[in-house]
Each structure stands twice: as structure tokens, then as C-alpha cells.
Length: 335
Ligand code: ADP
Ligand code: MG
Image (cartoon, rainbow, N blue to C red; front, top):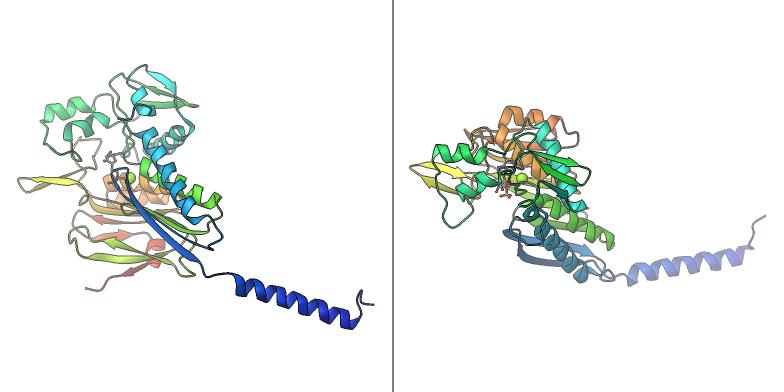
């Protein structure tokens, strides 16, 4: 026996169909919001797609605010930052955010045999690659600036950050941007947004897909500014690129850029550019810097230690090598 007689059932089904139809008909097409701001020394662009019933504008503004907060926390020059406090006593408690960044950074430092190094603050300072007046320091100056840096120079005991030597200067430039991107994505997700991209100067994390299609991310040719090597077709992933063409100066035909080899104190020479894919931008960011320093062979070996990551290294001679998974996601640009 049915709980309803037949006419009642038909009426109920018809009502369900009408309500469902009305909902479909009533839901407006997804709206797209795109905004950009200068943050963390670069242009940050946030794109979101979603139903107009979602707080799209407010969420994008909140995501920018969150990135500003992380920038202030991790910059050496901000009064209230964790890093500026390191000038004083040897050990102190850092914010949970700084602790999270440093934990990932130390993990990559260990896995890369020290190629990723968050204690190159003094070295960065003498080169001034990203400043108005970059300079080629004397070899003795470089050696001096390397003291207090390297493996074991920085230790995190819970949330207490301890440095081995008083001259140690932390620089989170190789990782903080990735972390800030993840925090922006977290804000958007919390607001119910399911499709978004946060792009900080080419370091990108995507949430979901782009209107049912993969996002298309062009990979810059490291030596030809108007060309791209290929396009990645991806969704729900972070794509971060580190290149020697981003911030550099040239002297006597030699390119000096902002990615240092901690072993020498000079810009790393094994790669032209590195692109890394990972679920989190913080991991992709630190790995891209580390892999850049290591170069093609050791770089691929480092990526192999992190399941779920993929990547490509354009070596010093311009030849790209990449993981099998990366090869499946890229559409090469024809010559
Ligand atoms: P960008 O910030 O230009 O996207 P990266 O993420 O690769 O590029 O970070 C570069 C920054 O990382 C440098 O400006 C410097 O602050 C820092 N850095 C340079 N060399 C190293 C290194 N070997 N390990 C960790 N951080 C580094
Ligand atoms: Mg990096």
C-alpha cells in the first residue's frame, strides 16, 4: 500500500517539480568579481565567481585585509612584526602564523639540504637586489654576511623562536607570500565561495575551477619576455614560479638576481626558472625557491620527496625538465 492515493501523489510530484523549476529559473548566473592591489611588493589580483547571493565583494576585501595582516606580521620593517622583535632577545614567542610559516620553511630547509634558508637576511641586505641601488658586494663582505646563517641557525620550540647567534637575521621572502595566498583562500572559502583565484605577481592558488573549465595559467619564457613556454590547465591547486628574470641587475654581462645559493652567498646559477604545483601555496613557494637553487637533477629529487607536488625546472642552459604529472597538465606553446 502506498502512503498516498494516486491523485495525491501526482499533485505532490507536480509541486516538487514546480518548486525545483522555480529555484533553477530564479538562480541568477554566477557573478564575477576581480580586484587588484599592491601588496607584498607585487600586484595581487583576486578573482571570485559565485552566486550574487554570496558576499562576493566583502569577501574579496576581507581576503586582501588578511594578506595585509600576514604581510605586516612577516615583514622585517614593520614595528609590530614578529621579525623585528628578533632584533632584541635571542628567543621569544611568535604568532601562530609566523610559527606555521617557519615550520614549513624548516621542513623544506631540511629536505633540501639547506638550499632553502630563511636566515639570509643579512645577505639580502648587502646585495639590495630588490632595492633602488643593487650592488655587487666584495667577497669578504659576502662571507661576513653569511655568518649566523645556515642550517640550525634558527630553531622553533613550540611557538618559541630561538636563534643560535645574535647576528642571525630572518628573511621570509621566499615563503611568506605563499602563506598569505593560502590565508586569502581560507577567507574566501569560509565565506562560502567555491571558485576563486588569488594571484600574487604570478604566484597563484585556485579554488575549484573556472566556470566548469580548468584555469589556464601561462608559464613565462625566462629569456623572452613576450613569450610563454606553455599553459597549465589546472584546478584547485597552487602554482608558484621562481625565476632569475623577475628581480635582477646586470654587471659586466653577468646577471645577478634575488635567489641566493646559501653555500656561496651569490645568486644561484643552476636554473633560469622553476614552477611548482602543490595543494598549498606556502609549500609551492618554498619548494620553488629551493628547487631553483638545487637545479634540474636535485630539484626533481626534492619534489619526489613531497607526494602530490609537480614541477618544471628550466635549467641554466634553457632546457626544461619536469615531473611526469606536470607533463600531463601542460599545453606547450608552439614555436
Ligand atoms: P618572488 O618573491 O620573487 O616570487 P621567491 O618566492 O623565489 O620569489 O622568493 C625570493 C625571495 O626569497 C628573495 O627575495 C629572498 O628574500 C628570499 N630568498 C633568496 N634566496 C633564498 C634561499 N636560498 N632560501 C630561502 N629564501 C631565499
Ligand atoms: Mg619562493
